Length: 432
Image (cartoon, rainbow, N blue to C red; front, side, top):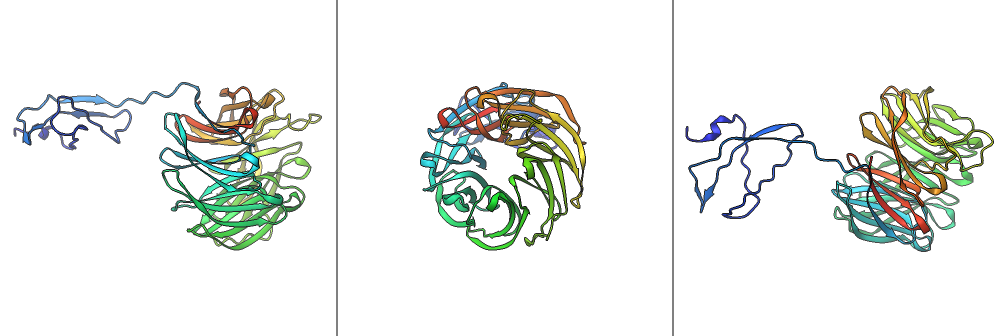
């Protein structure tokens, strides 16, 4: 009964961080949830002999960490030549991967470290993956491997996919394999992994039409057979946004006929067989739609954010819009639930992301007036109702923030990759 630990029904022993016998004792307790109180006491040994005495029981309450202040946290100029068409994804821990059109319009890949508090480190490694011509980069990870896919518009404006490896530390291996997806034209690739080696692609292809393709991409990064190909829009299928609906059903939002906003649903089997025709189709904007982004909200509710405009307004000077819509599990598209105009001046709203930010809020990044870079935070309830006004908004670049690609780092930190002033490549972390 001389062991104080009998007071605790569940306990763990934590050894100090310092080696050997010391006068200063530092302890690191991991996996301690916020707002949980723990009782502790100190016991020790000297020269391997356990000391008889212990400290009195102590209690500590785990408080929430301090969030970084609202606004830009850190920045990095990662290249002095960057002609938009970027993409960025997370690799592992604090390592992130960027694909972009760099010097001489060639295709480049770079890895960089970004801490959870938004501090950006130096470039870790880089590779030129396309030495001739590259636009419209898009990245995807092959699950459970260190292999990655980059889709791009390459020489002759043809569409290509390449595979390569990246270690968790951010070091590149050589290009593994290459596939010419479309020998005439191909850009704005979007990928979804259906399972196993089967992938679904949506892109703007030959004749500016919209295409769906399924392809075997092996775990070693090599390309297998093409499974199925369907043209989802014969006149114009630009900037497709691809989402999984339910089961074998998938949705595509895109700029279609007359530059209007269109939404289709398609059935694709797990083996990659695309149905002969779409399940349903709806024109969600009858005036103008550019660069639509689509996000699942909850249940059968989806949001589409894009650049739209009223009549008699010059192209590329449209407003920013969000619309919510219901899509049933079987692909049936129902009516618009709510509409919200998130910009009220004429703006070139190149909307590039709808990122969940917790508590039914979402972050949108876009290119605004005079090419400035802007982020906004909006509430979209799970029932599809959009709350006005905006929760927050600010300018992350007051000179040039062209086509910003944004992903989360940690709550409430996000990283934005974009082409900045003089077409230099920039990373910025923001808190909103």
